[in-house]
Length: 203
Image 1 (cartoon, rainbow, N blue to C red):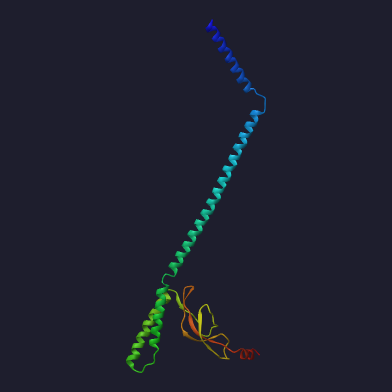
Image 2 (cartoon, helix red, strand yellow):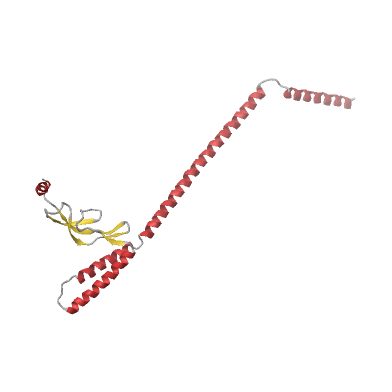
């Protein structure tokens, strides 16, 4: 009898559990729908947040790549400039040496022996000048040209009414350009006409 009673109780409990499960499966209240909706909304928010994060990372990556390209370009330009003007200091020393040779060759002398030495000095100077040309070093044309502060340095002032104002009257020291850069400024004497004389010339 006791065993039969236990079996009956177990069957009742099984039916109760089944009914409870069926009710849950066939529940028509809005409780479960609200939970599902909240869950979906949360998933959508997380997805949007993930999209924003990815977009930010892509933007940062783009800027980083652009900075890297600009940095490499800047370094390439600096390296090219260094290579282009690598011999500048050496060529400037050579220019100064040529000027010393030219000064020695232009000294007035009487003896034939000194004249022969000067001729030899001038020949050496000319050889060095040929080397300068090979390296794109050219003399700055100044005599008879308007004064240009980018290429010239005014050391003296003259007054010649027959020549235009600001014209270079004399080159005291030659100037040189190395490619597109000034290697050494020309030192010059510049014509400076007084205002009254300049006005008379214009009249």
